[in-house]
Image (tube, rainbow over all chains, first blue to last red; front, side, top):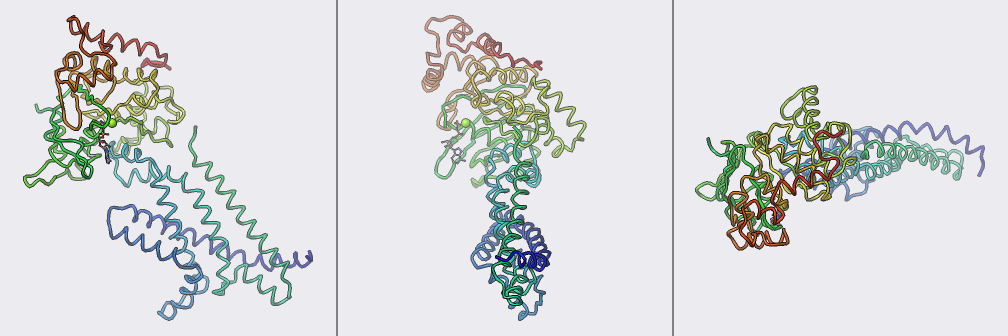
Length: 216
Length: 295
Ligand SMILES: Nc1ncnc2c1ncn2[C@@H]1O[C@H](COP(=O)(O)OP(=O)(O)O)[C@@H](O)[C@H]1O
Ligand SMILES: [Mg+2]
C-alpha cells in the first residue's frame, strides 16, 4: 500500500462525508418518527391501524433497500414525482429505517412488565400519559442496543446512494478508481472512515445505554 | 347510605374458563373486608373487576354510587364510559402483590406522578403531600431512593403511599405481603392496620390469617369462584361453618382452626395462631424497621 496515495485519497473521499452524514441523520430522524407512529399503530386497538403497520413492515423489510432507492429515483419520476438524488435517497432510507425501528420500538414497549400499565391505570392515568411517562422510558432501555444496531446498518447502507448518483463517500471513492487507477488505498481509506463513524455511534450508544439504565 | 362497594352476581370468564361464578358482597364505608381462599380461586380477579383492570362477563359492580359495570336484560355488559372509569379509579386505590412501582422514578416521584397528572396538583403540593405520606409509612428518609434500592417491605409501603396520594375512598390490597420476606411483612401489615384504624374502607386479599382476625371486620372465603362462607372475621376464622372453609384454614394454619376445648373465641383464636394482636404485634416488634417513625 502506498501511503502517499492514502493521504491524497483522504480529503477527496472526505468531501463526501457531509452527504453521508446528512443522509444518515435525516433518515434516522424521519425514519424514527415514522417508526414511533408505526409502533403505536401496531399496538393500538384499532384493527385498520394494526394492519397498516403490519403491511408497512412486511413491504419495506421484505424488499432490498436498493430497490427502494431505485424506485424513489428512477420510478417516481415516471409517476410525476421528481426528486433530487439526495431526496430520493433520504426517502428510501427513511422508509427502511421506519420499518426496522418500528419493530425495535414495539418490542421495547411490549417487553415492559404489564404490571406497570396496570398500576398506571389503577391510578387513573390516561394511556397517552402513562405510555409517555411510564412505559416508554422503561422500554427505552431495551430499545437502545437494537436501535443502535439498525442505525449503524443505516450508516453503512447510505453507501448504496452511490447507485442513485448521490456524491457521498463511496461515489467519490469510485472516482479515484477511475481517475487514478488506484484501488487498495481508496478502499482502505473509505473503510477506515466508515469504521470511525460507526465507532462514534457505538460510543454514543453505550453512553445512552448508561444514561437510561436503572439506578440501583 | 348505600354500601361503598356493591357487587352483585359478578361473573368473569377467561375464554371457556369461568373464574367467578356469581359473587355477591358489599363493603360498607369504613369497613375492612378480608378475602381468603385457595390459590386460583378468583380472589385477584374480584379485585381487578372492581376497578375494571378486568372486564366482568356478568353481574353488576357499583362503587360509591357509580355503576362500574352492569349486565343488561339481554345479557350483554355495559361498562362505565372511559372518563367515568378514570374517575372511579381515582376513588379506588390498589396495591399489588408485586408492588409495581415505577422503577425509573424515585419513591417521591412514584407518589406524585398521578396526583400531578390526574388530579392536576401542583408540583409543590404533590411533593409536600408525598413527603407526609412517606413519613406516615416510615419512609420519610427514602424519598429520593429508587425502588430497586429499597427492600420489598419498603417498596410495598411506597406503593401504599402512592395509592393513598390519590385520596381514594376505597383501598384494594392483593396479597401485598406475599412477595416480601416474611420478616418484612410486619412493617406492611402495621401500615395497613393503622390505615384501617383511621377509618379507611379496605378490601384485602390475604393469607395473613392473624391480620384478618385482628383487623378485618368481615371475612369472605372464596373457593372455585364462589363465596362459600362469609361473616364476622372471628366467626369465620375461629368457627367456620363450611367444611371447605375448615379444610382451607386447616391447611394454611397447619392445625385445626377450631379449638378443641371451648374456650372463649379470643382464646381459641390465639391458640390457633391467629388470635390477632399478640402474634401480630410480636411480628411487627421483631422488625427494627417496622415502626412508622423510623428514620
Ligand atoms: N388474564 C388471565 N387469563 C386467563 N386466565 C386467567 C387470567 N387471570 C386469571 N386467570 C385464571 O383465573 C383463575 C383465578 O385467578 P386469580 O383470580 O388470580 O386467583 P387467586 O388470586 O385467587 O389466586 C386462575 O385459574 C387463573 O389461571
Ligand atoms: Mg391472586
